[in-house]
Image (cartoon, rainbow, N blue to C red; front, side, top):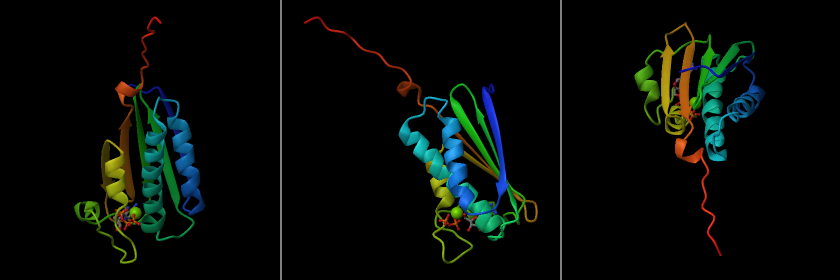
Length: 152
Ligand SMILES: Nc1ncnc2c1ncn2[C@@H]1O[C@H](COP(=O)(O)OP(=O)(O)OP(=O)(O)O)[C@@H](O)[C@H]1O
Ligand SMILES: [Mg+2]
């Protein structure tokens, strides 16, 4: 992917930053011709990844660091969300719909990330943190306008 623009964010693992991160990434992504619906989907995916970093990676402790790298290509956005938290022991299991290590949660975060973004990649190891990479492409059919002026 040819890089057109890139931004990096780094913030503490504080729940208030979930809203900050989702708005920041969506505002950055709006440089491409994403639809409003696309931008909403990007917001949900970023929220889920950042929430996971805070809740699971850092077990809700506010002194962890979450990093986001958002990269724009000509037609696509890549978002990476990274933490240096506890990591995931069994990624395959974590990705299963409705699986959660916390009985109070629904286990749908990765399902949302998968369904709202075109690709999802998870790299993690116990004690080594987690990196979630997601890509969304602008629908080419939506990025052009054409019309025919009929005589009357
Ligand atoms: N950044 C992370 N660090 C450590 N473990 C993680 C991380 N992200 C996800 N996990 C693990 O993967 C599981 C599945 O994540 P997912 O977001 O799908 O569900 P959840 O967070 O448990 O529930 P929900 O997102 O619906 O509130 C989590 O329960 C957790 O065990
Ligand atoms: Mg989650």
